[in-house]
Image (cartoon, rainbow, N blue to C red):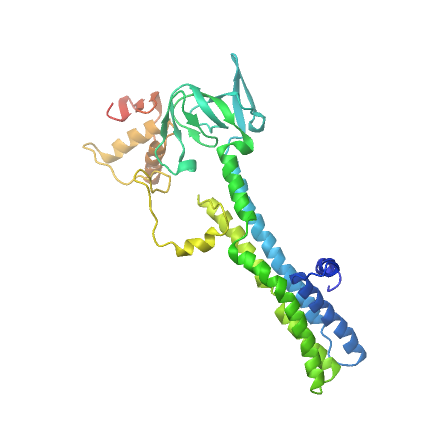
Length: 369
């Protein structure tokens, strides 16, 4: 266990020793090897060995690094989930022909055909059509944004109302979604100030511990203790001083923090934000900013007709379109277990609302215009 499982520590310590430097692996290697070597001597001297101590040191540190790897894996999954919000395929128009291709094959300049309810496959500029686009995953705004020819659209946002044609301007890692994912990855790769401090401490901490361990052995021998007892106490200094938490806790906290932030829609550009944010006592928002969860929620409605009938008609009409307000109404009808009725007519008016016929009843839903 000490020699095989701990080989990575011994190899790193040897490489460091060749360059006259030390790190935490030096302590782990020397502590485990010293305990192992002492145990072999102890068997010959018929005293208590410390094989279990040597094995425990290696096992404990390996367990810590395994947990760190698990944490990094979960944190990197947040970036993967972020990228999965994008479209998998794109409809590209060439002349009068529209073909479906993997989104990875989209090139700047391609004309993208984006239907209602479809995810925008890449950043682009609208060249044909008018529609509303749900940009909540980019901006947090819960209300769809009206888009006309000449306006920009962003990859991973959702077209809501009508078909639009956009010319791709940025794809893949250069798109808005790609840049956000790269920003999260860069933040995870940066070091917080406490982590840089830990690195600096380690550079002087290890040599000091080695000197203290050596002085411990000499000191106990000078006061009359046997070599075996003095060596055991020196090994105890090495074992106790192994700064596992110093090397694992800080990078793990940064990885998990940035990953969890990405899941909640909070993006960190640098790891030192975690330290600086504790000093924040005031948060300011611009006058047009929206503070919202990003998803519409039905709260109440007022009508002169039967509420059940009213909600059934409106939800049935909105069930045929993809719109955040309509989805909130449909979800409320589902919560109340209201059965939706089939549509016999539906006409979408981008930016204005919908016109529908449900159960022989003509319905207009939208703005006053």
